[in-house]
Image (tube, rainbow over all chains, first blue to last red; front, side, top):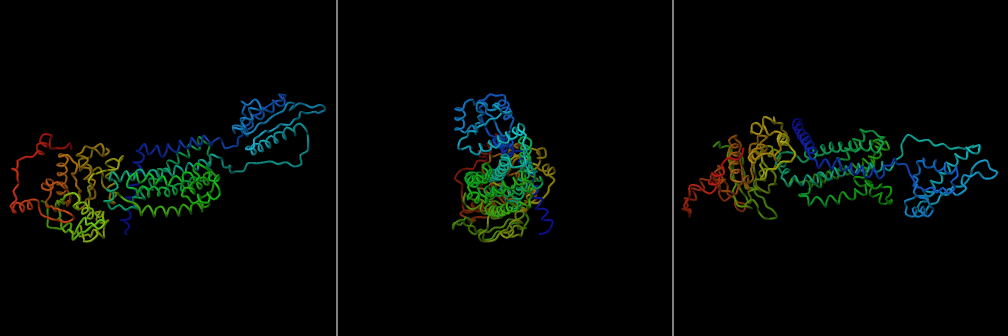
Length: 374
Length: 255
């Protein structure tokens, strides 16, 4: 093969990629599905999980004492970020009812006499009670220790004691994973899936029906040239989508991207190329939309629900986690999260990249075998 | 006629069968350079299969075909770069401008063209930024043929190019095909319209059930028939209903 003929072949690829991409951005429906659709999901899921990520209990406070100290104490609690105080609850019956429903995590009761200065004492005292249901033992435990810490502060101010041992906590550099971080990497995976599979599965059978692909078949263009051009334009389109998604996530949902953007971009392009191969295979094989639709559902549904796109995989039973580890989309979702929010580098993602590389080979081997121009 | 004696296409004992049934059953013919060659026959005669084998789109079961001396079966990509193909229903991808489609088709052949010059040559220069769906019927035909010839092929194949077209569009297409031939490009087309073959083709091969049952210029075939003592039942009128239709509606398409 001479150098010149290779240059010509790559010119073919570049021109097809360029015109493909341009054509894509003229298609409003396609833009909606690739840019707006993931954003809608982002707002829905971001709204559900995106409350800054700090744990927040819903508690009721029943102040049965009404002493100066207790009123002050309630005010102090309401500024605490660990709780969300439900001020609508006024009686114990109501609190029990809400706790049974699950709309309330625990109830703090300040019994009458709480905060009064007892006879022969120089300072106020009392015991706060935390009530909880069996389902909320964890919440109650956390709440109790938070209260203990608050009381500890108050106690040391009231009674001068020596404290030989103390503990201090300090935040480390790496931000812990919030619920939104999990959700976001899942949504990135979901958009890559949608972008890579639903696109070609709709357009290829359509282009076959119109005879557009048959027309290319009468030219000397090779399947690999056609595939490569499509992968390139898909990667460009995908990057635009990702820039929009990350932009919105950072601006609106305070996503903190710890890792390096170039590594993230490389990883995402690799992911798009791999997942897009599934769409190429399915759309390239199908002669019409009726053949394509059921096939695509079979392929995408397991990944949509089991690869950690909408539901974190750590919630799954162990055996299911082992299996879903090897779905093509799982390393994508994990990798995006580890780079973006855990600050890992590509070199630390060996297992993920390995699984993806194996899938890449399998998927494209199938895609080349089953491709039909008409 | 621009016909020379140079052989452009040579087909020898070409065969193709689908699940045991012969679609093309050992046909042989040659096409000279600069000819318009027609393959005629009823539906299912094997016309399209023959064409697709010559276009290197369908594997050849047995026999041999060469185009300008190049063996079709063993050089499919070379063959595809030497030929232009007009599909039965010309379709172009949507949301792509004419200028971009020309760039795209040229690129499919690994070629770069001066798109503006190219469109000017086919009188579509002012439509460079238009989309195919904005063209008139005649412009669409012209554009489709121009796109198929963007790489200056030696042979131009058309599969039933006028099926489903109205009379004006058919005549317009005949004119376009003659222009292609005048550029020195050999034309091979299939049709099941005898009038089309008669006015357009230099020579025709009539196929039936996968075999060629006659091969000659149309007028030779007619003379042979008359020589066998054939007489038409009806008196031939000097015009037919199609002529009336064309006369009333105007011959020219909106170009």
